[in-house]
Length: 116
Image 1 (cartoon, rainbow, N blue to C red):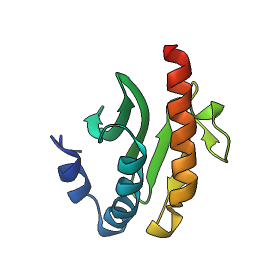
Image 2: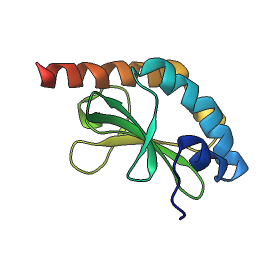
Image 3: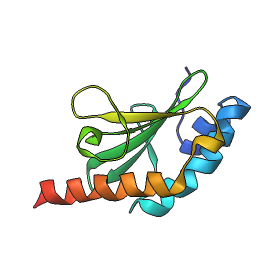
């Protein structure tokens, strides 16, 4: 996969179905997070301070929305490596803005607790 310098370039390079997922997902995350996304390890990632909170990585047929401390979050995320957990978004219809905002609130609270 080519290297991108911006989130917009990354999204533009995805197939149409995944661009539609990003079109629904990015505004939800940008509204809920204190800082806009930046590319981190090649995928759009949102941080709280210096700590990554979540990422939205494209695969061939879905976008994975993953939270670094997602296994500590309530609400149906699938466990991943270490403390991470994720959900696969296959279409824009899978983007549940209310649920995603709730996950983000929990993730940000976890970051606030760990900083205290």
